[in-house]
Image (tube, rainbow, N blue to C red):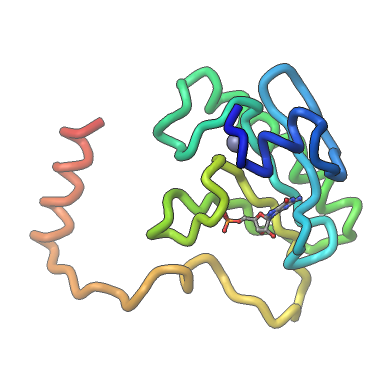
Length: 141
Ligand code: 5GP
Ligand code: ZN
């Protein structure tokens, strides 16, 4: 547990949170400043900053909770779809340094945008560039 982490505080019951799911490894609660009704955050109970800091087993638990909660959130919010995503590190917009998956209900014509808009300008990549980065990813796995 990290003392000045709000999500550790919610998991420990020291900070109020509208908890919607709890297990030995994972907790989910409503976002305090929601982008849509039902906007839910899914966190590992232990303090880990990034996706890469999770063991494969804990990552499985986090994704299982997202998989289970997404239809529940959509049903409760009467949503037409959802964005399910992580801001993974400050460069990607992560503000709370305790990994959390967002489930953001979406509605037809809600004026929002797809996840494609989160990055900067699209890079101009050749076929060779794409081959090279694919190979680097395969090598780094
Ligand atoms: P991030 O940018 O780190 O991916 O998103 C952090 C999210 O946590 C934001 O959507 C913000 O509204 C939410 N948040 C920040 N502090 C608290 C808190 O103390 N309680 C709850 N429930 N949500 C919080
Ligand atoms: Zn924490």
